[in-house]
Each structure stands twice: as structure tokens, then as C-alpha cells.
Image (cartoon, rainbow, N blue to C red; front, top):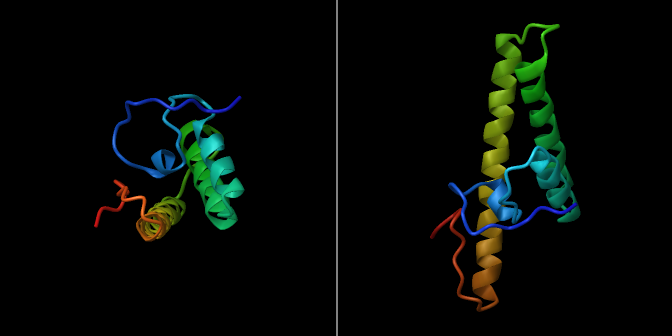
Length: 109
């Protein structure tokens, strides 16, 4: 199953850049797969690590999440956000250099 696009979205994110606008239980998996197919394997791997950390924190009743683990997850999240901003800037540059004239809402000029 592939994700469906919708005209309504809340905010701009890596999901928007991946063309995923559905609210579905597999949206994180689809996002990871998108970036892997797009040649961003490191980003896809980091998204998977962050998802795993979040799932542990949200659903694991067998263990306690330490402050260090939480800080590491926050740091990873910030790294991913920075990487997405760089990627958005690169895409905006390519769009503008190709003469499409479309601006990227994730990283406006």
C-alpha cells in the first residue's frame, strides 16, 4: 500500500517533503522507506533509530528510560531536523536552478 496525498496538512515536516500527508499507523515506516529510496540511507537509518527510541519510551512497561537516553533521543531529533533543513535547501536550490520557480515551504528564502 502506498500513502495517499491530501491537500490538507498541518505544518511542514520531513513527511511533507516525502509527499506523505496521511494519518496512518505506517506513516513513519513510509517516511523511512521514502528517504531510503531517495538515496538518503543515513537519514532513513536515523529516523528508524528515533522511532525505536520513541516506541520504547511510549510503549515499554518493562524498562525505565534514563535521562541520558532521553537526551540522546532529543539530540538525534535535532540532528534529523537539521539534516531535513539542509535537504530542503538543496531541493530548493535545484528547483530554482532548473527554472521551475517553485519555492520550498520547508526552507523559505
